[in-house]
Amino acid sequence: MPKMKTKASVKKRFKITASGKVKVAAAGKRHGMIKRSNKFIRDARGTMVLSDQDAKIVKKFMPYGD
Image (cartoon, rainbow, N blue to C red; front, top):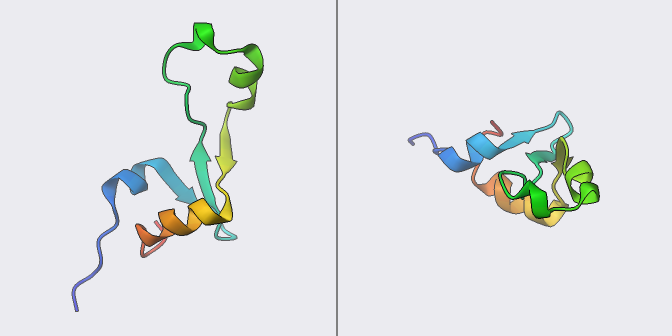
C-alpha cells in the first residue's frame, strides 16, 4: 500500500502540538493594518489553537501529523 500524502498547503500553515492540538498563525495580518484597530492587531499577535471542529478538518489532510 502506498504512503498517503500530506497536503502541501496544510504542512505550511499548521503545526501539531505535543498534546495533539492544531496551532495556527492569526489571519488578517498581511496588509491593510492602517484600517485595523490596535486591539485587533494586538490580539492577532503570535499563534492560536484551532477549535476542535476545525482541527478535525485539518487533521484529515495530515495523515502522519507533520
